[in-house]
Length: 212
Image (cartoon, rainbow, N blue to C red; front, side, top):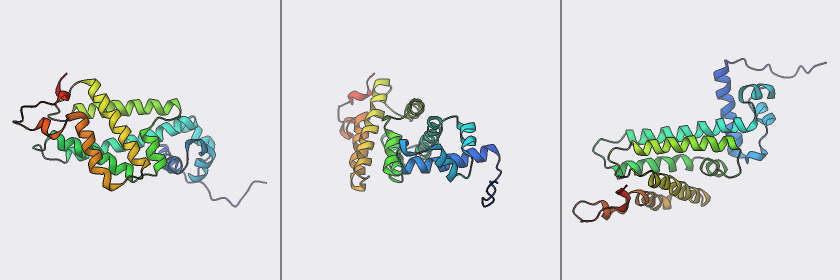
């Protein structure tokens, strides 16, 4: 005889149901290492059948990739909003500062395990690496779209993203200390644009990062 003490599962439309599962999965992956999260546990927390998770996402790596894609897209959207909120007269240096600062704000709100996973590929499944590659292209497009950016060389833009990821990862590992934010942001800006003096009009110096 089947159990009768279970509450009936809620019937939701597929889009809403998938979004709910992704939210639950994000909490699970944020609280535990990837290897310790199971599809069965996510299904239980989402009040769904394990079969439904496989129907929607196919596998645990693909579920993880979708969670990762959603989180990275939100970080990107927040960065765009931070830059778009600035007046048109704001310098490119301040726009880039807002972009980096927005990323730090998001990372500081996350569990360290999840923040690290968003930054570093680590030993995660190939599906996750593909998502990170897509996000990297999105970040490159965002940089190229910054008004007044004097850097057009793809090697330098890729290098900036790599540098930013490295210092953000170190910042997360150190517990996201607020006292280090200014130095981190300044380091990122200098990595791409050179020092303040190199960009200041009338100094007779030009940043080497502005050349192709």
